[in-house]
Image (tube, rainbow, N blue to C red; front, side, top):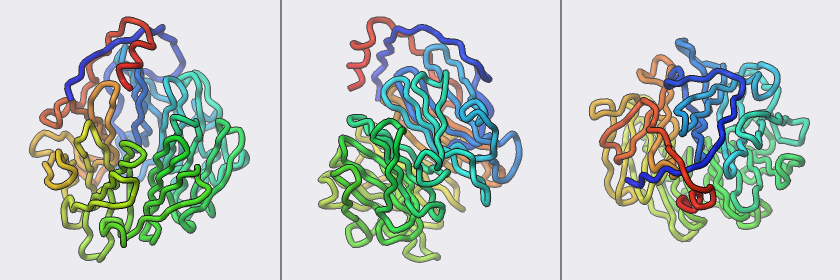
Length: 385
């Protein structure tokens, strides 16, 4: 993980909103997404308050200027309402989708919004536009077909998926897993993988026809699938990695990890750590698997160089600046791993983020080095394919 090419040509556009030259306030991080120039983070703005925060914000880091910009709910949707900003996804350089979720008992005014100009303007969407429900846990954009997928929370919707093949103009509602929520989606050229939650029998599913029919992979295929598959990461259409909370017994919960390299024909299962924990998030960086654990025990990151056969722990005693990881993602454009957290003590909900470019030997909470870019865009883009 030591590719250090940084090339780009750009013009700076000044937009309204709050900008930070230093890292912004440390808040709960729900999701992270990347384009060549920007890093986007879905946040709940804790504002030094303990408890369940409902002030959602979206933040954008400019790799060239090392500046952060904060978008409030009012900036994105044109009206302020209480919610969490729970999901963010990117198509190519400038199209960004963001999803929101309500606080308990409330219903947000909108489900999601998109921009085609990196946040200069936004188009909000809701149930009135045909989306299943105004609550979005995850977003995926098929990089080939541009199909937009929305995964909805458990118990919130009769349909757990919303799909648009025309950029959000019209939507199809789908329910492949019997009224249970979707925690993660991965898509490529009409092939779709989804993860369902809350102790269901259909927990990981695949469609090869853009959601018309589905194949189920459950506990019989991999013991780690029993329970909540909280996250999945697709390296290729045939190679998929899953992080799961194993609910085999309420007194014997296991943080599980499973992967397939043959499109689901066979699954390989490894236990990450056994106590009252669960594997919340997973990513793969150049063959290195990262899994984040959270619950009652110390909340840590685990790294494996051999697809789960052995694990190296990263925690606060050996340099990890926070605990309670909620999301970990590989940033291929800068060749670094980012991790987002919900808290540093588990009792207050101020979160944070950090990054590493040396496989976890050192973790940083400051801005990554600026990208100094020259040359033409097409040459630069080819470096990342």
